[in-house]
Amino acid sequence: MTLSKSQYIRGLQCVKSLWLKKYKSDILSSPDQPVEDTREIGNKVGLLACELFPNGVTIPYKATSYRKKIALTQRLIKNKTKNIFEASFFNDGIFVAIDILHINNDNSIDIYEVKSSTEIKRTYLDDLSIQYYVLSNLGYKIKSTNLIHINNSYVRENQLDIKKLFIVTEVTNKIKELQNNIPIHLKKIQRFLDDRKSEPDIDIGTHCLNPYPCDAIKYCWKHIPKYSIFNISRLKYDKKFSLYYDNIIKFEDIKNISIFSQSQQIQIHSELTQKQIINEEAINEFLDTLSYPIYHLDFETFQQAIPEWKGISPFMQIPFQYSLHIEKEDGSLTHKEFLAKEGEDPRYELAKRLVTDIPTDVTVLTYNMGFEKGVIRKLATMFEELSTHLLKIHDNIKDLMTPFAKKDYYVPEMRGSYSIKYVFPALVPEMADAYQKLNGIHNGTEAMHTYAKLANLKDKTEIQRLREALLKYCELDTFAMVKV
Image 1 (cartoon, rainbow, N blue to C red):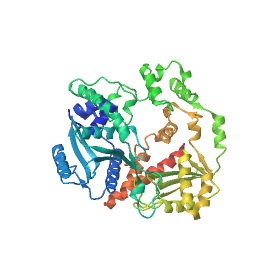
Image 2 (cartoon, helix red, strand yellow; image 1 turned 180 degrees about the vertical axis):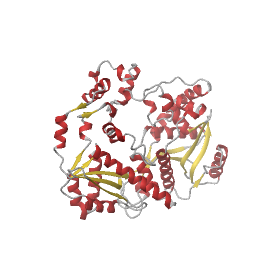
Image 3 (tube, helix red, strand yellow; image 1 turned 90 degrees about the vertical axis):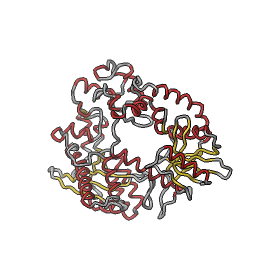
Image 4 (cartoon, helix red, strand yellow; image 1 turned 120 degrees about the vertical axis):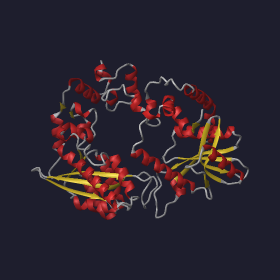
């Protein structure tokens, strides 16, 4: 058995997933672009963290075998290199590459694992634990084991300060506590991997999603209907799996709906009877809070793990685009939009355009207003000269999601969701495939990742194509609100 540390972590999550990775990898789903982009962000964070350790040497990732990586690591250690990045070791069937290995004057070592997260998660400790296991079994004296992660309270000034951007947390004692369990885990993993022909008989469960969504879900979940008890809104996964283990999978299998919340009962009843539920009184109360002209507003934002501009915190929502449909009482529409130039701080230009496009005394309608309000509050704190106008826009915002979140308006086609992506096709079936027909960008995650990568593109034609796709997507979001 030969395992990388990532395969070991996969085996801890689900040994069936690891078996499929080893022997039936063709059934695994390929990572989508957002996943690839997230990995790229992790690589950038890892490279930046190495700057905390001057004069380090990196073991090449490409065009080197495990054997060459290990040999080069040993050569660097022998030559008294203090800091080695991707230092590679092998023991007991496990290959590990240490993000940052620091060698002290007394030849003891410090292990550093870099994560682009803002918190310490259990799976990170498991990651470090297998590294500690391999190196300690090889006879190295480990002085400390550490996690380096992002400090999300850091606010960039004119220059990036990586000592403030990163938090270094020693977790040596926690890692030592996990050591006794590793041989048990390895023995279990080896028992399953030794049988190349028999796929492990492991049912689906919360492990399919935690700590990472598994790329074997489509394969392992193929017996679950497209719409099932797993789609019941606001029902925790442990309760969903409790139903599943009681052989309650389809809505028709539910015999007692009283165990569910009132909102969930509405969804279940609607699905079983195929009837729509419309609370006209509540809807009219909501509509009475609106007045024409109505300014339908939607923002798109992106995040930076490593802040590029002054006033930015790691993973802060940075608005780069908005769409605005202005609806008059006679039904006529005017559309306005803004999309920032790529590679530049978009906040001030966006805020300036926003106060030009939206008066201080009109109804502003959003979908999930907490998001838009949060963006506007942040802009108001940054730009004092625009603050008064921005806060008046903020105070005039109403939330179109409200009737659907409360299930005052519910139809079976909404599938338990009150996302605009479900509500829009349910209420406007003639445009049910509008998002699917868009060219290249179909949801907010794709929009976020697309804009983030624009600054690194050189092909002007491709940049223009993606900018047009961003505009079309955001425009559809507010047009969908108008139609709803």
